[in-house]
Image 1: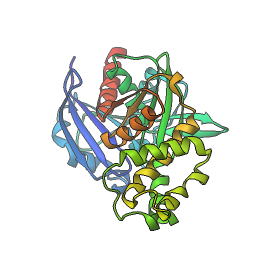
Image 2 (image 1 turned 90 degrees about the vertical axis):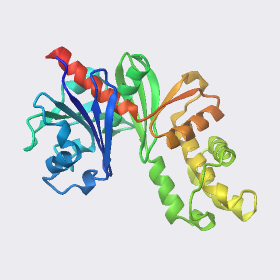
Image 3 (image 1 turned 180 degrees about the vertical axis):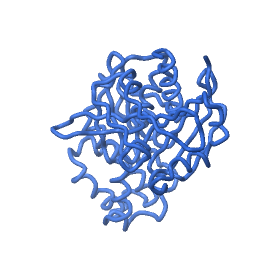
Length: 304
């Protein structure tokens, strides 16, 4: 029986919600700045009510939430699902919650964990995007994917199972270097539009330098010796850091197509970086989250 599906992407700084049709298409979207860091303890039900109460009137409605709402600081901790794991493993580990304003069923999708270099790594929300992207790609069962952001995630999927992933604090390091390091002294106050030439030059520099600790200072010296315009320096630094990410991952043309998932601005940079190294790339936007949560709902219907 068809039911109303409400999909919620609840992160640290923002909340996105979508009302989905029977075929998974988005009927309506809403957004709020009430990420989990802006929600007082015990107020998650209230925030959800404010955001989409009219979507949750029918008791047959299913609301699925991904992201940091399942963290220790969120609504309810949803224990990580260890890799390797497939879509059914996520569905089987849903954490159910109750909201006093509705009788709709509400569940939080668990994040994933893996072991990397002797230490644990985790993700929350990206796992839904990964499986959603594979669905959008015609039900692909394997691939290498990257999800750019403050903490970028690289993942490998084989036979429909997420084998492992790794996290890079690329976006956070950019903000730290851009704002608080000596490099900020020669940069403009605002980033401005992407300078493609400076960006790809940064990617190339990272590829050959061997370490971001050695190459980062060139963001200052190129300006000091008038070899790069100050307006281009933020793009160059961005290229250095993303290039370092690619170098550390060891990606090359032999890996085949890389799927980049996320916002248009960030996925464009990663696509440019990959193409500059001869690596084919394709981009998928925020629709991956909605498709992933819709897929969870469909799988629940099949196993009930």
